[in-house]
Length: 147
Image 1 (cartoon, rainbow, N blue to C red):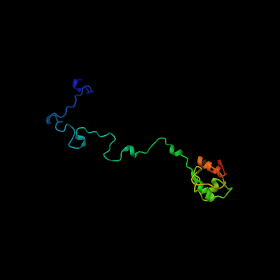
Image 2: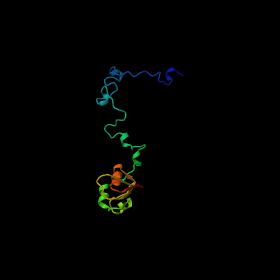
Image 3: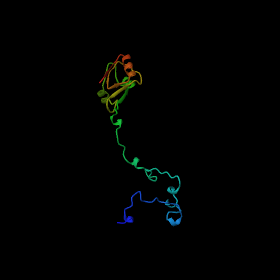
Image 4: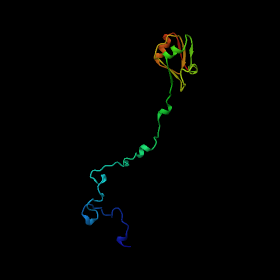
């Protein structure tokens, strides 16, 4: 075995010397090629840049936890609608609202909001009430019941 036939390790390899004339084979452009962005000094192209193509991190679907799938969506009804569609002493339930076509879908339930005035005495059964709606219904002499 001879010394020059040994495989070269990292420690044995000589450092690449560039920019020292044409005789070295690495002169002139110093292994940077001809022109272009990467041939310029101070070039800093991020590792994930793909030349204007939509980047990989935007092409892949999002993963992980998102609370939006557990969001509850309620069908909304205002006091003005209750005053308009019901008579004094009626009982308002989600089934009655749906059968009369006042709400299209019941979704996760019905929520009563305080928009408008209520002058009739009604018994309202719903899944949610706004606090102002409860006070207005009770002020008109009606009752609220959470289902």
